[in-house]
Amino acid sequence: MPAVKLTTHRVEKPWGRRDLAPLFEDQPADRPPIGEIWYEDPAGQARELLVKYLFTSERLSVQVHPDDNAARARGFARGKDEAWIILSAEPDSTIALGLTEPMDAEAVRAAALDGSIEQKLYWKPVSAGEVIYSPARTIHAIGKGLRVVEIQQNLDLTYRFYDYGSARELHLADAMAVSEFGRFAGNLPPRQISAGRTIFAEGRKFVLERWTMAGRFKIAPGDATIWVLPVEGQAEIDGEPAELGDAILIEGVVEIEIAPASVIYVAYPGSRVAGELLVP
Image 1 (cartoon, rainbow, N blue to C red):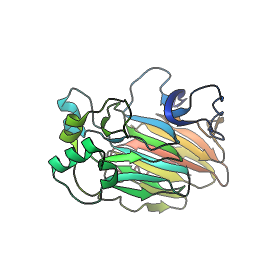
Image 2 (tube, rainbow, N blue to C red; image 1 turned 90 degrees about the vertical axis):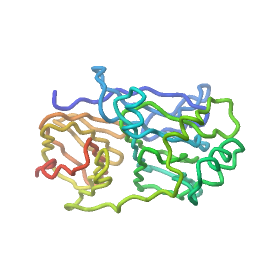
Image 3 (cartoon, helix red, strand yellow; image 1 turned 135 degrees about the vertical axis):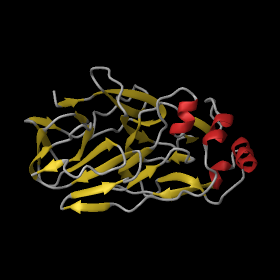
Image 4 (cartoon, rainbow, N blue to C red; image 1 turned 90 degrees about the horizontal axis):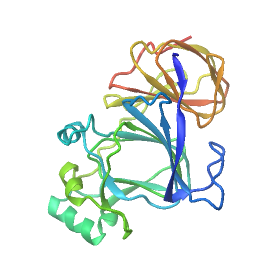
C-alpha cells in the first residue's frame, strides 16, 4: 500500500501531562502522566526517521545525542538530529539550545556535576508555530508547558548531563565525548517555495515542510519515504481521513485533499528539497 497509518503507543513520564486533547484522548486522572507518544510502522519495519509527540509539565534533562560518526563508532546505524514543531506553549516556555558562552570541556564537566550547567544554557523562549532544528552534538533541554511534535533520525540514544537532582542515570563521560561546547549556531530561516509550501531544515539530515494550501493534489514521492503529519484542520489521503494526531507513511503516489485552514507537516530523509513532491 502506498499510504500506511502508523500505530502509536503512549509512554508514561513523571514530567508528562494528562491534558492531551485535542490531539489525543486525555490521560485518566488515576494513571501516570504521558510524556511521549511514539509512532511505529505496523509492519515492524525500522525506518530512517521517527516521529513522537511530547507533552511536558517540567523541564526535561540536560542532554545530547551523538552524530552519525560517533553513533556508528558505537555500533548504531546513525546519529540523531531532531526537529521540534511547537504546537502550544505557555508564556514562559523555553527550550535550551547550546551554551550562553563557549566553555572548555573541564568547565562543562564541573558545571554538570554541581548543577550550574542549567544556568550556563541558552534558554530560548518559544511559542506556537515555531520550528526548531537541533543538530546532533547540541547540548539541549526541552522546557515545561509544551506540546511538541518531534521528528528525528531514528536512534533511541540519549546521553544525560544533568537531571535536576533526580535519581535517573547520567552519562557524563559519553555526553562529554559527543558534545559541542559552544553557542547554538541557529537555524536557517524558513523558505517559501510556492503558495502554501514552506521549507525548513535544508541541508540537514532530513527536510521538513509545512503545507497550508487547500485543494486536491497528488503526492509523488518517487523513491523517497515521507511522513505526513496533520496538526490543524482536516485532510484525506486516497479517500481515507488523515486527522489530528495521525502520522501517515507514504511510499507511492497518492491523492491528498486538504481542507481550508489546515496545517500539515511533511518530513523525509535527505538534505535536498523534493521539488516535484506535490503536484496539483
